[in-house]
Length: 251
Image (cartoon, rainbow, N blue to C red; front, side, top):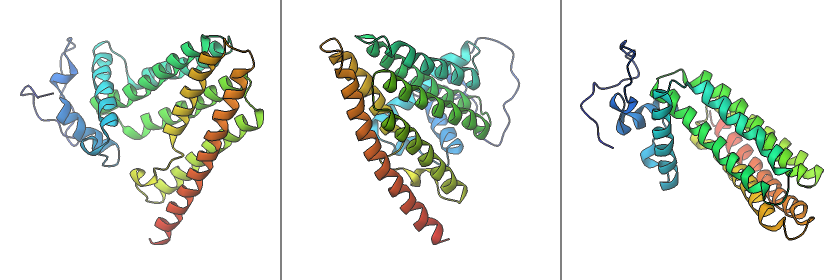
């Protein structure tokens, strides 16, 4: 997307007051400026060097965030909307049959809300740490909702609890590593949130696909997916601990 000659945006200069009119935020911050602002707000992470899917997802979030600003939504409200979508995931999945497919769709809606909330924060030049704190809480709560959906579908209770603990410990170690000076981009492992997202989506989609075939299939599928989640999550945790130990020991 190309610019339209608007005044250059910088992180150091406060936004000039404007009249309350219906203005497309993209007239204030086009895609190129958004990428620079995103890097400033996310520890230097440059979207131009991200994977093709990550760039596509960021563009979707940028467009949704621009529309949300036009209708007056702030990042906190969008985060809350995403959390509400996550809350309905287990409530719908428990219906069995094809209902888990709708739950998977709501899970995707919640993920889009999370990404859009980040975009809104960047577009409005909001304080990234405070908004990020709220989003982190919402993300952990959403993951608990996904695990609850797995439990309601009949997954092993031990695996449900184990996956929840692994996710919590992984995020705790990651946060301590970042506080210790390690860049967020350097803490990526196979046990990160994308694993949990893919696992939850696969669990719900497979349960919807095979649930009508036999009543006990969703339980077995959920247990199998959570077992894979736990295995890869444990490997990712050890990987993160090793990377963190090596990085902090050299400081």
